[in-house]
Image (cartoon, rainbow, N blue to C red; front, top):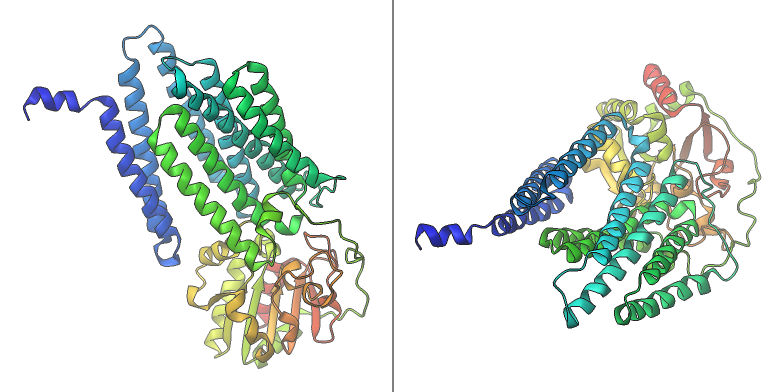
Length: 477
């Protein structure tokens, strides 16, 4: 191959394509790294490297392809400004966000992906050049599908953000005939897609955009607070498919590959979490399809005597314990109690006490929330166990510390068929000899269901800020 032939092959498009292949491989390595605690940091670095390569390649290809055209200067200025502004906002938010605000931030970021897919779809509809016949029909279908997926992702993510940030009630929206509404919207989408491919009129795109926005809002609004971690992973999947749809419209291989990776992994994670919660994957992903409004009075007040304990008595119980299991929940994240909890774990292990952590699949507000907090506090990962691994060990445990968890340790799920959370697998903490519940008040959990655990004879309440109470126990020890 001579120099001229090499120059012909090394076009901006081919260079960008090669860079996209490298970036896609790095993204795959990132997902593989993030699947294990000991390689998670490397996984993050792979992802950063892949995204950097993708951004540089995209900017280079855009510069090289547009150079010399009348609109080049304006387009390039807009591109640079968008990258700088977006990067600055992202860096600012990443630096100031607390771990407690991470779930709603992730939901908000998903909404941006959906909005971008809608805008790309509209641009593809308004700027059609050099296509005819079957190729044009395929393009119209891509536009319609991309706008629909993006619209559902956008409003669904906004509703998730509002619920997670307590700006909207976490209770599920129970509209009459909501199943019919969901199915009707999907049927209408299929009919409108065929219509648009045959007759690509702009008003059809307006209709499907409004339909998608309404459906996304209704789907997530119909899902209760207890299922919000599943919603986050589900929206993650939606955003991936929205990105893939945008990739088809932009003829961008990297967007297609990464969108498919995110979409499939998010869907699989949602399936795993639904299985762990004894929830139907279809019912959650379809906005509670087939689930009637709860008829139980489980959202009322549980009856029985409350036994309180102070930090000194709790410390005495821990001194005498042979084994301790700690079950953290969202309250630990709110109180930022993971650091004193890690110190308490270290102190107890030095005394010869067997200490382990029991993690419920949906503890917190997003998948792996508690695992991230404990890793941040440098808790040894070999003592952090999942619900299925540890549930049979509670009966032989001296003391269980329930720190900020509520719905995930609620006996009603296992014992009350009429409870709104009936059938949901929970950590069977009540089987232990003693249970100490760290809680600010007697209020219900995120699912709005009263917890009879607080009234069990072997359960005692330690009221107050979880971080302060754990520090009090540490001082006593």
